[in-house]
Length: 264
Length: 325
Image (tube, rainbow over all chains, first blue to last red; front, top):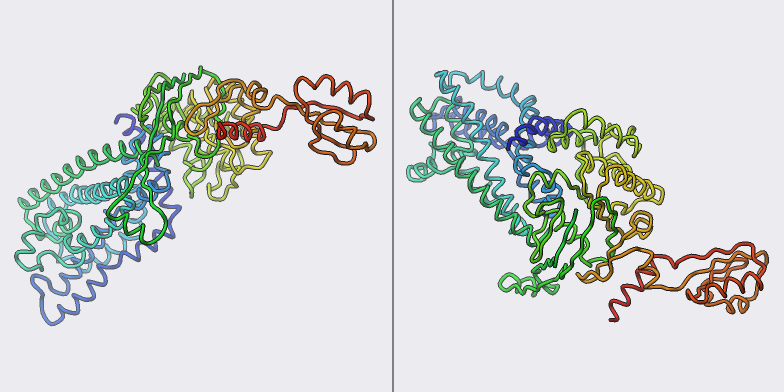
């Protein structure tokens, strides 16, 4: 771990260099992450005749812009890379290096965030400025947003890593990932704000881990939760992170034993 | 440096005939079959040795290399490399070895090789002065200067392989596992790679275990060869001895001052080739002396050389013997 921490800054630098090298792909990727804008157009039209739940037109605008921002900052795609490397056998080259492959993957993913931010943040900030009266007023909530975003990123990354690791057993983990993506885009609030769900579904959605991938930081930014709730939810989020970390480690070890036994 | 005792590596593979029906059936029932990729092999390699690992495709060469480098767990047997159990993949062990696979690359595709160098410097925790010294040396030995700043994807196969070797050796490993390092390279690039591997071995006293389909690689680099076939070690010794044992015959290459009749050549031994003023005649070890004397006295000779049969033929015969037995 000591060596890993020492190496991490260089891993991030290299990851950043890679992200810059892929800039064209990034632009395409960013423009393909436009679902929140589509949803915004839809709901804005619906809300024209009157607010839907707690959301006015402006409220929807703030919600989906914040969603877009959180999504851009916490996105991770490690499952594609892992699946590809497991299938092609290049995972072997990672295993030969004295650093945990998952740490290396995490650096590659994290390092891409600044590159995305450079393009995405200014645009979205301008939009959000226009709906600033819809955002949280409490400065402490804004402070909590930082660990909440980090938690969301970690949780996203770890879930991807878990699905990617399952690729050591399954012929391809990507279909599993697509199933996850489908469920998660509904239950994380990516498509529809969780508080617009009918009562019982909402009650379940609010405690499932999906909320902490996306909806929770958005709720913070929009000031939908008070201080006490925010702290409680942050603890819950990091609890999920801890569980995911444990699951990733356990699965990775078992998967590697299998990989080592069967070869690749 | 490397000790292997009774190593076995068996895989369970899923067997399925082609076709839709078989595909559907395999959803419910999967017959498995055990493949003995490596079946009870033992050997020891001392520090600083260069050993060639020969065998046809699927003989178990790569599997053995993967076990030795810690990627695969042995099914049975004991393996020790640089005083460690490879499958534990401890940092101390990984710092001392490298595995170069001609078919796979660790260089980052869209970035210049120098970026992968920096990454490996950090991962292997190489002190800066040592790193700079090593890079300077590798750059000189492999003539990398013009390549290091270009994105990897723009390099030719040979250029890329040189950079692969450099990045694999940056941490100055004591044990080199080279799996087909010259595959796909042209003759001069193959020679460059060979020369480099030998120089690295001599300078740092590193142990080298190399597999290659190009017999030239093995002949030029490896005083000792191990031959594996169907998972079993069928020969371990000097290349010279292997050739003598499998093909005790010699080849006389004759260059003549004027054309001769074929029967004049047949008097010496088996004629392999006869073209105008050039001929190759195969004789047994025992006949050699007599045949040379006879050639000198009866033929209009310009030049005469004696060679072992080509290694490719030696290997082909060796594996054919193995199959027949």
